[in-house]
Amino acid sequence: MVEVRWIYEGILCIYALSLICYFIDFVQQNRKANILAFWLLCMVWLLQTFFLFSSLIRESRFPIATLTDSLFFYAWVLVTFSVLMNRLLKTYFMVFFINLFGFFILLMHISLVAKTQSVQSGIRLVDEILIAHISLAIISYGFFTISFIFSLIYIVQYHFLKEKKAIKWIWKLGDLHRLEKVTFWTITIGVPLLLLGIILGFAWAYTENTEFYWFDLKTIGSILVLGIYIIYLLLRVVKRNTAKSLALYNTCAFLILIINFFLFTRLSNFHI
Image (cartoon, rainbow, N blue to C red):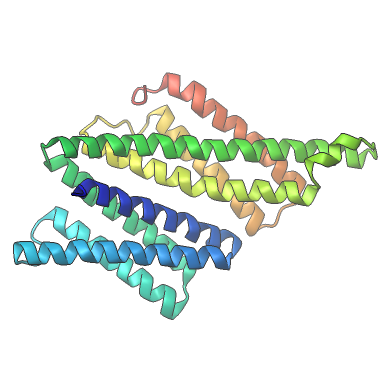
């Protein structure tokens, strides 16, 4: 028999994938990403609806008596509205942010379930939230690292082209447009991954009753890194800065990321 925690984890994973696709569509206006995000969201809605009605049949009452139940119903309502808005109003901008909040509400529900359970499955669920938090943050750092490498190559190739120096091997690195495009794509994927990782970190700290240091250097550093890369996307999409200036900005952003990963972790009172 499939454990309930696996279904919870499946819902969170599908929900996270939907958010990433919605973010890609939000930044790049990618129709394929929007369609995939919508169908993933429908899967989340179906699974949540199954949970809702199975609880209604099993307990013979509407599941809103406790805070935990109310959070789940709240998350279900937000997903329902998001599905309707996606199909009827086409307001993709609002759908992403509604679902981001809905993901947080669902995560709080699951955290409360894990917190109130004394069985081993509940303990494992809490541990897996921590593992997911760390994994998503590191994977996002991987995408940011790739973006940094491509930005660095862009700067080098731009320099040689400006100086009109013909070096045969430099063309194997790809043209400037392709380098900038890959950088943009990797940051577009990295930002929602880091955002989800930070949200999971907050949920884990709350679930474990851990003394959370809001002014902890690593916490501040992670939020700062997220903000810096969000600014990159704003400069790229809204301000439409030149590719060279964006490459230089991304290089500096990666240096801050490295400082956060190595130095702030060692100076942190919360992260070990």
